[in-house]
View 1 (cartoon, one colour):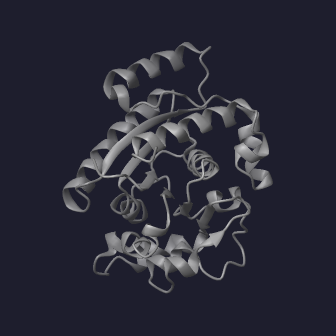
View 2 (cartoon, rainbow, N blue to C red; view 1 turned 90 degrees about the vertical axis):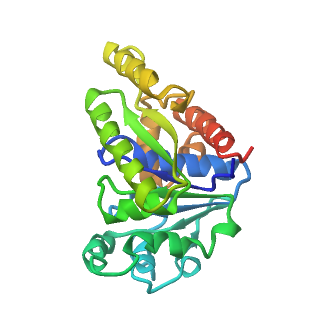
View 3 (cartoon, rainbow, N blue to C red; view 1 turned 90 degrees about the horizontal axis):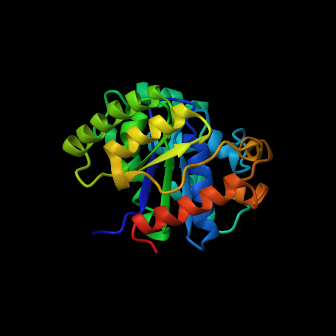
Length: 258
C-alpha cells in the first residue's frame, strides 16, 4: 500500500470537533518529529488562530491558492511549535466558490497548489469547512485519506451516511485513490447510554475504521484555542492531550508513517 501523506478532516455537520481534531493531531504528529503543514481551508479560520497565527494581516492565505495569486510556499507560515507549519485561512475564502464556478479544473485547485510542497513534508493535514461545497470537494480531491470526526449522537450517524456517499462520488469523478482512513469519536462520555448505543452502531458499520481511542469531553481542550496552543502544549497531562497523542500515533501507523 502506498504511503498516505495528505489527510483531510471532513464532516458536513458543524460542531463535531473537526477543527479541534485537525489542529491537535497535526500538533501530535509534529511532536513525534514529523514535518507537518496544516492547511486551513475553512473560512472561519479557527485552525489558524488555534495555532497562534492571527487571521488578520496575513499577506496571503489559502484563498490565494484557490485563485492562483500565490504559491503554497509563499502562503505557508511557520508556527512557534517545532516541525509545524500552517497555510492560514480567513473570511476572504467565502468568495472563492463563486469566483471559481466557471473556471477549468476548479476541483483541483488545492491539489495542484499543494503539489509544490508535498515532498517537503511527512504529513499535510487539511481542515475542511462544515459543508459539501467546492472547497470541501477540493480538499477531498487533494487528499490521500479522510478522517471523519463524529459525536455520539444519531444526527452524526445520518451525516456520516451522506459523507460516505460524497466520498464515493469523489473517488469516481476526481480522486480514485482516496480512502476512508478512520472515524474518530469526539466529546465522548461513557457514562451516557446514548453514547454507548451510538458507538455500538458505528462499530457495527465501520469496524476497524473506528480509531481505538475516543476523545473525551475535556475542559482543557476547550480552553487551549483561546491561548493559540494545541492541547499537547497547553496541558500535555490532560485527558484530551493523552487521547489525541494516541490517535496521532494510530493515524501515523494507518498512513504507513511508523
